[in-house]
Length: 200
Image (cartoon, rainbow, N blue to C red):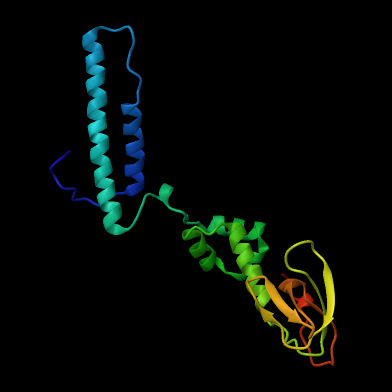
C-alpha cells in the first residue's frame, strides 16, 4: 500500500471504473504451455495487480466513508438531466404537477417513476375530501378480500384507517372500504364534493 496520502480530490466514479479494470487484471487467466519463468512472471503480475486493487479500495472506502458518498453506480438514485425529466413527464403526465425540481429530487434519492406517479395520485386523492356526515348515503368497494360494492347510510363521519382505506359506519356495523371508491349517492344538498369526482 502506498504510504503517500492522497492530496487531490477523488472522483469516486472514475476510481470505481479503475478498480474494475484492475480487478480484471487480477482475474486474467494464467498462460498455459509456457516456460516456468513466464508463468511465475504472470503470477507476480497478478499479485501486484491484487495489491494495487486493495490499495485502491482502501482509498475509496476512506473517502466515501468520510464524505458519506459513494460511486454513482452504488447509489439508489440518479441525477436526471432536463431532457430526461421532460421525457419522464411526457411518459407519465401525472408527474407534471410535481414540477421538474421535485422530479429531480425524488429521482436523486432513489424514487422510481411509478412510485412518483403513485405518490402524486395519492396526494391528489386526498385533496378536497368531502365532509361526509351522518345521513349521507354512500356506495363504496370493500377493502380487502373479494371486491364488492356496498351501499349504506352513514350514522357518523367516516375515518381513515390507512393510506388507501376508510371506515364507514351505518349504526349497525363498521366497514372498511377503499377510500378512492367512495361515492355519495344521496345527501341533503350540503355535501359539495363527491369522492368519485376525485381521481384516485
